[in-house]
Length: 565
Image (cartoon, rainbow, N blue to C red; front, side, top):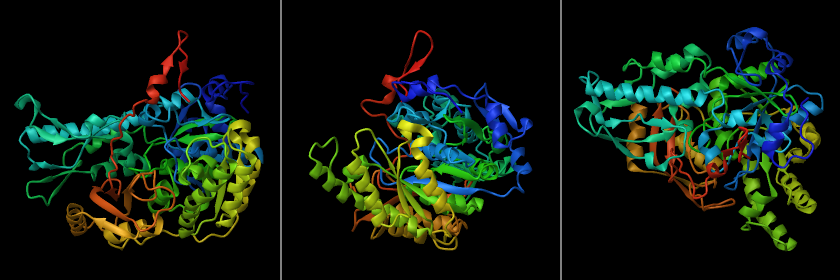
C-alpha cells in the first residue's frame, strides 16, 4: 500500500509525493516469476511474453470494459474511474489487474496535460508514463518511418516493384499534434533527394504499426502482420506492394521486439497496471494491447480495461474487433457519466447558479446517457453507470443522475468518489460491478464477418450511432469494391469518427436523430487485419489548440517537473 501526501495541491503533487513499492514487489504479488520481469528503473518494468506461455492453462478472470457517454472536450474521467474501480476492487478484497493505454505526447502536450488518472486514483510513476515511458511509442514511430524510407529508396533505386508514386498509401508518423504535416510534399531538391510526391504524417497513435503491436499475439504474429502491410500499389493500380516485398518487415520487427512486451506499473494503492500501446479511439481502435489484456486475465480475478471515448468509439471496437480477434468475452461494462457532461448535452456549459435550470439541463442531457446504455444493450452485456463526481457537483445533482441511469436501463448506478478518497471512495461502485459480473450475459458481435464492408459500416452507423443511414462518397465506394475484389471483404471495420458527437458532426450534441454518416475514404490495414472507414472531417493528425497544455509544462531548478495535471 502506497502512502500519499496529506495535503497535496495537485494530482501531480500526489503522484510525486507517493511512496511507491519496488516494481519487483508488484510483479511478485501479481503472480509473475522474477525471470519474467525486466525492470526499467525502480518503478516500471517490461513483462516477457514467456509469462503468457507459462500461464496459458490458468483460468481467466472477468473482463470489465470502462467506456463513457459522449464526452466534453476535456473528457469525463474514464482513466480516473478505471483506476478508482481497480483500487475499489482491492479495497473489498479482490485481485484486480488494470489494463490501460500508453499516453501519446500529442494529447499530453495538447489538451489533457496527462493521462494517469487524477487525485487519489492514479497510476504511477506519473511523469514517466506521460513522458516517453519505456519508449514504445517512439519505437513504433521508428518502425513506421523505416518502412516509409525503404519505400522511397526503392522507388529511387530502380523501382523494381513498379510502385506508382501517385498510389502510395503509406504515410510517415510522429507522436506530436502537428497539423502542418497533414499534407506535405517530399523529395524536393533534386534527384539525390528522391522523387517529389505528395504525402503526409499521421500521429503515431493512429498508425497501422500501432494497431499491429496492439493486436499481435506474440513476436512471430507481429512479424507476419508487419509483412502484410500494404505500402502502395503498382502502376496497374491492382497489385499491392507490401512491407514484405520491400524487405522491411524483419527490421521493423527488430525495432519492436521490446515494444510488444507489456509494461508493468502500479496504482497509488499498489494494484498492478499493465499499460501498453496507445491507439486513439476516434481514429484507431482505441484499446490497450491484446497481449496485455490476455496476461491480465490470467493474473487477476478481474481485469479493468479502459476503452477510449464513448461506447460508440472504443467499446464498439473492443467488442467487434479486439474480442473477435482475441476470443475475449466481457462480463460487464462501466459507463462513465458526469453531471458536467449531462449539462453540456442539455445545452448548459459552465456553472449555473439557478438549480432549476441546472436540473432541466441534466434531464435533457440524460438522453445521451440513455443512448449509450442502449448501445451497451446491443452487445448483450450488463452495464453499471459510474457517476464520476466532480468537486462542484451537488448531492442533488449526483442523485438525479443516478436515478436517471436506473430509469434508463442500467443494472446499477453508483457514485465514484475515488478522486478525493481513493479506493475507499469506490467501494459501493466496485461491489456493484462485481455483482454485475456474476450475471449471465448474451455477449455477441454486432455483425458477421461474412457481411459486406458496406453492410458492416451501415450496421455500426444505424445500430450504434443511431443514424438513418450512411452516404459513401464515390471514391470510397470504388475502394470498397477493390478491397472486396481483393478478398478483404470479411475484415472487420474500424470507424474513424469524431468523439464529440454520436454523429459525424462534432456540433451535433446529445442524442441526435435523422442524420446520415458520410464516409469519405477507406484505408486497408492489411497487417492489423481490418478496414478503416473515415467519416466526416475527422483527421488522422490532430493539431494543437491556441492554448496547448505544453505551455504550462516546465522544470524547476531541482529538476522537478511542473505543469502536468
